[in-house]
Image 1 (tube, rainbow, N blue to C red):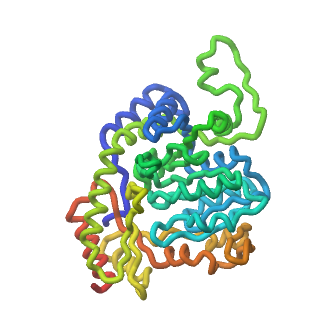
Image 2 (cartoon, rainbow, N blue to C red):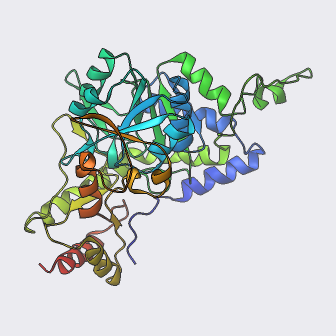
Image 3 (cartoon, rainbow, N blue to C red):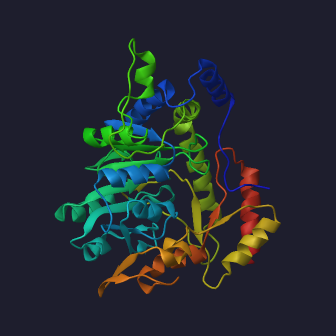
Length: 394
């Protein structure tokens, strides 16, 4: 079986884990602090705060942006369900707008019509590592005084052009960027997340809230020469990353340039070898964005049965995934409140189909993600391509 992806681990990660365990400090500690410093330096942010997942990162980012019950957050349904869920954790209501079929990202021209007097933030997504049009989104958000939070779960190592210069996603152009280290991502700590920001007040809140809003961190108490009793002045969460995870993350971050080079090579080879399949839609980078190729997404020719193609490839020993889900089509969001924006203004969402979100629905129904991981050799990739051609009967 050729998997959809696999972590790129070696002996360095094993040694780092063993050293963290041998140190006796395995929860949030010096390895986490070092990982945060190195991650901030890599993306060009003033601050980086490690947490237990990107979902928890999104929750803290929205909370710091003062998103609360009844507020509106403009976002996309076409994303992993955590994007919408994080809005609901705050008691706020996601306002879904559609995506551009070329990049699978939020359409900036639809943001304006979704703004109301209850809108607090825009939660944009760099889907599958492909940068969204952040500059255009920020232009609209600034007109209305809205916070911009980037769901950069898939986007570590992706780049965007800003004032003629290339910079990495995570250098905060919005207010906060949130990353994932799940095993499906380009680098992994098993699970985990990171928030980057240039806002010192936000960073202080993240660090407080991730550890139950404890007034004195345990790292300080353990070093103290006198007895210290901590207090808990507000509601906090257990959103910490462990030192074992951070030790792995530091090694993975060091591997990232090589990982990106390998992923790009594989993606370019896919593009070269699939271009002759009639009607097959291939991914393309916008002139102002560079993806990390976290996923390789193809749009099937018109009339193809997505499930049948995937099943035939599975029968040939090839794991695939369907196009990115749409939260509004899931049973949970037949119960959870959501709104959508169209020419008639904001409307209450219900049901699993929404004409105003048709591009997101089409992407879910007609796209397939092909395997892509750094260890993939030409022979494996050729096997995948043959299986896809067979599944498409070409």
